[in-house]
Image (cartoon, rainbow, N blue to C red; front, side, top):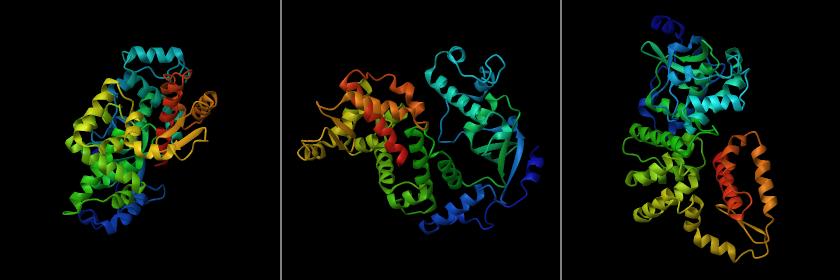
Length: 373
């Protein structure tokens, strides 16, 4: 099989000269353009082939972490089985809960994959093939892990893949995966942080003696300069404080802004606030407000007549604010296709109380801030 795949991927990958060994800040844009060209639909540098699912392997270094193993996926109930008729209903969900022993993370992950599989419906209708390269006797997936997993749910035997002619360098590998994943709405902050940290480290390895700046990172990862600064500050803080990283990893902190605010406190205050977060004594939004106290006081003296005061962390709801209107705004937002996946999370908020509506609003605000970054 290895010889057959090598024969298929006979066209050159990128430029003949290996410029990755001397990647300077001046060559970042050229690299990004080259990578874009390599993944475009019309490129002559890759071959698109139908290959057996069993010939592919997941990338263990992918920043996107999955709870479900492929072997579990193969044996799980599938909506494509005749008894379910391509429908994810209560009966199906109860079977999934039973199969995964009520592991809510696995259940949510699997249902998300089912949604993707049903949207593709059959392998021939997949618009964007996965991207892979030859690694030993297998094709290692570079981009498209969820599409690959969805094919197992579809009970497919083959999948379309773009086969690169050569294994990408570590830098190319990380950059390509970042571009693949950065706009995924279900990508967790921790997964983004891992990818950005790895990208920054590899850039510094390529540019010995230089420290990556927020400007360079913003250009490299195609994100705003302020968000690049947030990421670098969090990366620096997690070197000394593993509790901060663990809070991000476990989902206690899901907002990039909140993680950044925490990183700005000294180590002892960071640990104090994180312990309060872990115990439930304090909410993430309380942490942000504490760090923005001076700004809040300035804003307070500025607008006594407004019903809703806007500031960096969302909205401050006054006594005269119509809570039903705010709750309705949240409800309408969650009907949007891009946000509908959050409905189950928001079901936990108490919309009959000011505290519950405020918490729900600020959660929605955090999600929207991450989406427009």
